[in-house]
Length: 266
Image (cartoon, one colour):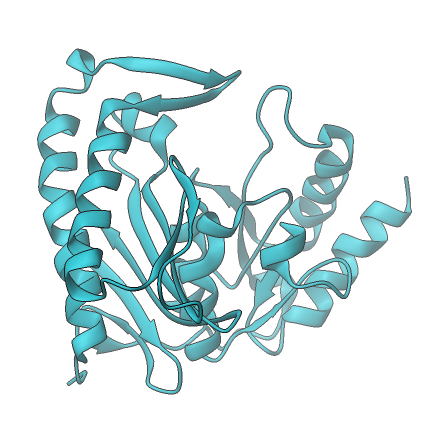
């Protein structure tokens, strides 16, 4: 049985309260007021409402912490060591198209290190969470990354850059290489859940380019605490570069090697 800390209780209460509104709005998705942030990048009234709820609830539990939030950006707190990193609705495009695969992502950063992460899928009622040194969990069940060691038997997650974003030719080269080297590639449209699926052993690995901190902060804690390996295409921290490769320890190097060779072969 997982031991749920006071920090977890703060994070889960915020996620659960926001999730109630998301589930109601998801049931009435055609009635949402939607504005366009950019080509292919939508923000809904559900996004904004969920972010307000999460911020209010987190401030109740930890009033001095700062924030980095997808919609409202960064705001410092009285405590300079701690910062919440929040995506109130990861998978907005899925949500707006009535696809029941989206999540709330909340991470806590201390002195530049991610020390806690929670990813909640309201429709399936799956709460993935982890704290530094305490392991990763799905609800009350301990998580471990998969044990597969052959890339040809692996299932790999990814994210496809959308219109006017990212280097499409580079991505297509990596996709073609992994399609030939693995048993399958999946594009689910929710980076936080892709990382949670690696932590849970559902995916054996995952790669993507051009992500934001709120896309991956919570998932990085989950993968690390579930025994996975985290890196990228350069020596930089994925939180800073936005480019990420994760897998279990046996598949990380083979996966990264195929990706790097596909990029270099341009």
